[in-house]
Image (cartoon, rainbow, N blue to C red):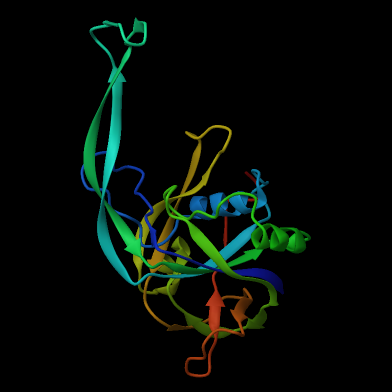
Length: 243
């Protein structure tokens, strides 16, 4: 199975919990699927069809800290005063509020993308991206250290480490992790139209896993070997095929 593998790294990143509006802003410990979709579209230079794209990743960081940010809160002006400087009635008022945002330090990611019949196109896009590669906030610039098309091998066993797992793994596979609700896909044409899904964040290193279903597993033969096993790629999609 041929897929695209991209090795990326940056200085900082932060993945905001969407439902936190005030106070300290915590970060997901791994990027949501919607963030990965935005990263791919940045490289391509346009919004691409999300159907048919599968992805998986291995994500690490070296530490956690807080960044002080200014948030501009705008509200409708009650006074409707005439602004002499600009020559119009003031209908908005804004104030600056400092907040603490949790950030992940020295993040790295190996991203795997399965996109039938478009691997060469996507390879060229990441090799020479149309827009800056950003993962997280607009200031979280990432570098593509390596882009290549590789061949994954089928296997019935391997190990899972530092990756995002589907919700089904918490229900059926009994693997360790933290259950979170993440944005799976945000419609670029209507940003309030969001597909949500439950996932399991597995930050553990090298959990041995043997397939108990009839699904074929794919492993990266270039990954480190652990007890004679290689890293399994856990696949995700942005939308369901019937959406």
